[in-house]
Amino acid sequence: MNDTTIKEGRYLYCAVSIPDQKPDFSVTGVDDEPTTLIPIDDVGVVVHECNNLYDTDEVDLLRKWLLQHQQVVDAVGERFGTPLPFRFDTIIQGNDDRVREWAYEEADALSRYLDTLSGLWEYHIDVMIEDNELEAGLEERDERLQELTTRINDSGSGDGTNFLLEKQYNQRLATLKRRRRDERARTLRNRLSDITYEIHDRDTGERSINLTDSKGDESDRMTSQLTRLTLLAHENREKEIGDILDDVAAEPGVTVRFTGPWPPYTFTPAIGDELESEHATD
Image 1: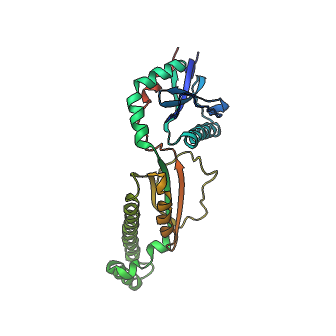
Image 2: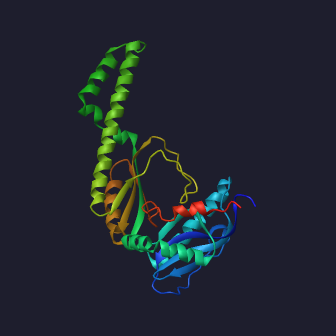
Image 3: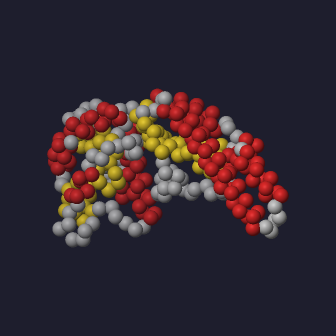
């Protein structure tokens, strides 16, 4: 038996508060497997039966599995309310009874986190700004840039001094642009913090498999990332968030992308991480 095979297991998608002990729920899951919901008191755990781990070097197949995982969690959210999602490829060895045993062990934590996240959803915000708008008026307001411009114009074009002056100019300009970008991002964050539960900055340099776009837009490279945020907010606040972003999008040279609601993947505690050690090696 290779290291991706298990005798019997359950692939875990999420936990969710359920209104009764026998909810009728089943959708197609990862690798087109049928899912079931296992009720444990007032909590349901969505699973499918499996006998192998979902490990592959094929990017397209991994993308498909990730998307199917997300679609199951989305369907649970639409039916029952905010779910507590588990990470992709979280598998517990054993049958439904083993899942119930684990859920009873984690009952207090599961109920606490589900109560905390009730009605809360994750939203993603990406704000881009054209470089010319980010630079607009900086030289007119900055004496150092004005001084460097004068010295550049007075020096010869082939002079080594000219090269050094232009380098200093670009460095000063980059510093001022960064300050302006940070100030505008901070202003937006402060406005959003009044109507959200939690805000995380997303690394502008991070790379990940994109589940929402088939292809990134790289047609215009003369733009800068103003900010990338992940919000945890109540569903009743979605319109207010949208109104704030409409104000930002109305500013010259600014583009805003607002997506959600998503299950709160970013804000989910690490329940179930110990299950990863239960992969069979027999």
